Length: 317
Image 1 (cartoon, rainbow, N blue to C red):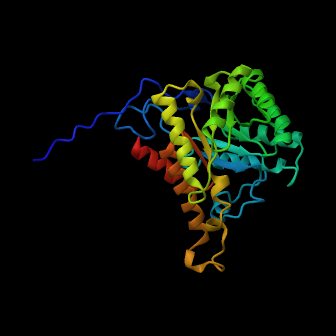
Image 2: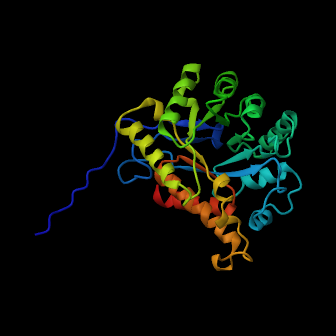
Image 3: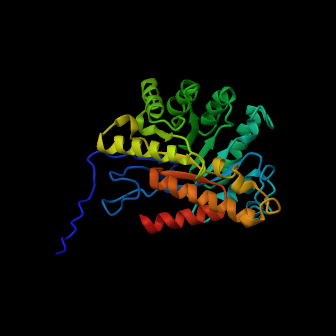
């Protein structure tokens, strides 16, 4: 005798904070759901996960992907690059990575980088903007505070405040200049929660914080990313932990385009297939896994990856 299967929807009383980014008709909202990631069959997901496209202040100088270079062919300025990125199929927002500020790289001055930030913001026609620092804590403390000031009125996301610089970045972005703040931790639920706690104690509202809880390319210790996101979402929804209810934003491209599967040439590894396709596949697989695990937004570099993940989201939510 067959027993009927009666599925019970898993919907929670708690919900992920709804955080608005950008202004006016172009604004997007991250979070707001009270179901597990992509569980649209258990309840409405009013705000589908979003997809961002990443550009850098270096333009195409450091770009190794032939497909990305082709996409931006004809762009003669960072403003041209930004405008092309903003119009990419499936892109909900633009993320500007200030790669050139790295003291161990191009070491551009803060003033040079702020000029780029303003140029990009003006070029993207109101598209929501996230700005990521140069990944040097000391320089980012000054740089991201100046970015927050330069983008007053844009309701941008400043990535990121870390344990070492959350006071400088959080105070400038979340308090002085009324932006949204990314709280960045290293794949650990306790570190993620503690950073949110101290940020709110600083005075930054919980509705102004998004989390970057860390990532990795699929196959590179990625199980730690999955378990961390799973635990965060479970605590936020089933336990109602207010210090873990911030939406998650995951920069994917920084991880996926630097692994051997994406970088090894066809001459060195002919059995692996086309180099470009490998890079795209790694980016798409990692982004899909991030979304299933709990990301409310992913940041990608290749326009084909952006379009593919955007289509996946539309079909699932």
